[in-house]
View 1 (cartoon, rainbow, N blue to C red):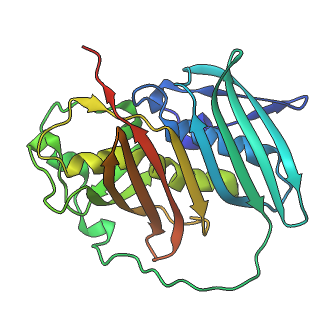
View 2 (cartoon, rainbow, N blue to C red):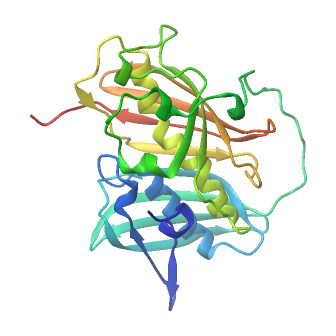
View 3 (cartoon, rainbow, N blue to C red):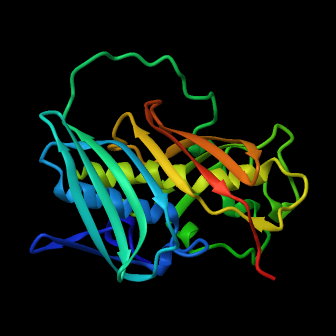
Amino acid sequence: MGTFQDDTAVTKIDGKLTATLSRDWEIWGPSGGYVSAVALRAAGAIAPPGHRPASYSCQYLSAGPFGPIRIEAEPVRQGRNVWCINVALFDGGKRFLQAQVWTTNKSDGPHKIDCAMPAVPKPSALRPVEDFLPPGTPRHPFWEHFESKHVDFIGWENGQFDKRGSVAEQWQKLRDFDASGDAFLDCGRPLLLVDTLPWLTFERGLDIKPDYIAPSLDLTVWFHDLPGPAEWLFCDCHSDVAVGGLIHGRVRVWSEDGRILATGGSNLLHVARRR
């Protein structure tokens, strides 16, 4: 099993960008958050030195392939303090993701944070999710990359649903992660979680197990701070709107020392399972 840093690596040769999508990150195909992390790193490959991600937004046009992909990354604004970079990922000649990434080198300006991290137990006080799963519970390969600890474990595996609705509070830690000073790789961690958790959060508030899936149509993440030395990331998740075939989820990501790292969300499309 490869690491997140290795499996999202972008290669630049003669100005051309490529990457290889690993099957180890499978959820209904390559995880959308994983593919988005590759796109974010592609923006980092052409951004000026000293820049970090400010925001990321994308549209998932189709499922990506496992294997080699081609990447196009074009700066469409090159300002003194901000760049805007358009990124597209291709399977052969087929575009399967398009994204826009804002980057910045700003470090000064107002500092005001009126939101507070929920008062929850630290990960050291919680049991791993594996302790709550019945033996032999199937899991997507994606989750082998994580240590997961839920503040209140609820899942279909043990026949529970959350009476509060579609909300979730959980800690996540990527195994064997090393950003090596790469801000775009580091921001890939909260981006990955903002993409992944809305569907799982939506399931928690249902009293009947869904017989459908809901792939993401899009993803938007605003980055507030770099995770840096933080290993465990806390995710405060809400997927409390489902209307007209669309499910909306939003996630805030915090460090263990209480810094807010990112805010984001996505719209998911109701899709009947193939019989």
